[in-house]
Image (tube, rainbow over all chains, first blue to last red; front, top):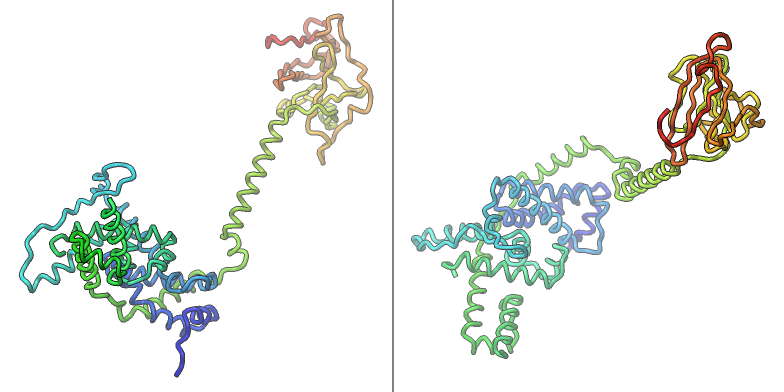
Length: 193
Length: 257
């Protein structure tokens, strides 16, 4: 039985000009990265584009990759940076930020204009799709710094340690942000809990 | 108080560990309704989040990625060592350091003030033929704009041919100006002693014989300011400089000439 090559070995092969090694690496991570960026940005086409940009950067910077971190941490970090950069670009494109207007004071988290969904539940056949839409909308309204750790933990299933490495912050900060993000979501999805 | 702290620790563990709780936490949850509600709420929230179906990359993902890599490789090409270095952080830091050092040097040179070192004359043959002039200014070439005017820089020991003299406070004062520049014809006036300085009884005055060509006096003050006075050409015939008298040049600081 042939043992699959490690991510590091595939990246070394990529660096040596082995296109198959890079294709294997892309095959391992393309769905994960696309899904992660999609959950961050809530835009499928944009997510695919950013996922490709992620792999493009991995390819270009293959020579600078340091094996002190897991490759998955490395590629998720690139994807996170691209996703957050995209979210910031979107914010700048808005003429007036309702979120900014509702900020109650310095140091406090901005309150979102998207009020909790108090409508009665629809027919049972529509509940699932409605529920998914609410979850996606609730995630999309999370502040950037809460969104990434929450998606990494509750959607991608990463450990706190790995999330801390990806976001380049402490594990305590990660836990705190995830807790706040969940409280935020709880308020948004009251009818579904 | 104790119960509140216990509830807090329990909820923190529920938040971090999900289903895998310690025995102590499980006991607390069994006996605490709010913590049980919190546990159920978090479990439901986790269930909702994991219920989102994962999206997959499109079928042509690899093909499009290869096309992008190929396009970039063609447009960019291999980066040379020097290009890579020029765009690197150390190179940018080095360039910034060079700029700072150069800027500091220029500033230091600019702030050094007048240079009291002895000087060398800078007379071209044509200028000597044309006339005489005096300059002690180191700020700008004083005579070049005027035809038939000689630029002469007087040193500490002007030679016997030095036509111009500068006296301030009763003592001769000489100023450096563009010395010994390559390709420039010059006469070294510091080789000999100044013979023609004539001071009157007034220590603030000097007497100059009337020259036959236009003459410019540039007098420099201690604070670096320069005053300039231009005298018209004179002849030894009918025209005499300022009513045929030897002109006392005052160095009083009244800025009126």
